[in-house]
Image 1 (cartoon, rainbow, N blue to C red):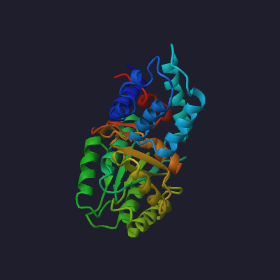
Image 2 (image 1 turned 90 degrees about the vertical axis):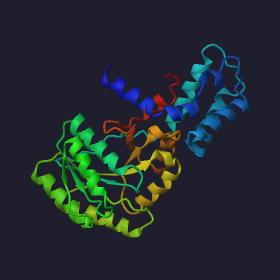
Image 3 (image 1 turned 180 degrees about the vertical axis):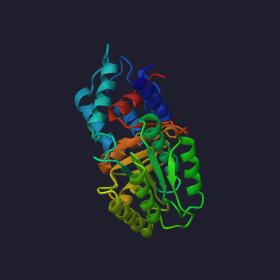
Length: 313
């Protein structure tokens, strides 16, 4: 099995719960002999909204189906063609910008990771470290700048050991910007390819956290010109549409350049990816597809839609 095939199957497995909401039985929804009437459109609308695709996106997709397929009786290959039409309509609603990480012209590439407590931020950082170090062969350093939560530094240290990467840290309660500064200096001195900086995950409504993020950005930029090159916001896919508000509030304090959507395997709300991308105009760059450190995939919008709408097991 090729790498691309394995990646697609992993993505497809992670989206199983969402796919079951969308099309538990495509042959029944778009069965031969059925007319594309209001009843069918209502059922399609219910499934799209149930998967948290979002009302606006759903309305536009339904309108396109109604315009082209209204009152047609499905015959022959029509069911497959209608499904393909729905997929194409959803893809048209997506921000199709590349989900690849913006690498620095000269290493190290600095990635600042933020997100509220409980979003899966620490595990997502471990997955990123694994992806860059064990998959891409890059030299990675972690900076444990979430110094306010007692267990955060310890947890990240354990993950660094499991993944096999270095970590820069200070005692709990230390100045986060100081840790980020030390991490940037270490990345330069040790010739690291990638520096991933963890940040505090207190509630996004706390203005002091937002000021802290701005300070971290400034001190990193003083050591590595142009850094951070990426600011990834970890959003919990199980929060569905509520994740959009988190992203908007974080974006008021720090320029978020990409989304890491975690826990997508544990939710039937995977369609929220579509709503997030359309509402925020921020590309989703990675998705977390399981509990293992290797359960992460760079986000490919087309592959995501293909996996989401694939009725097979």
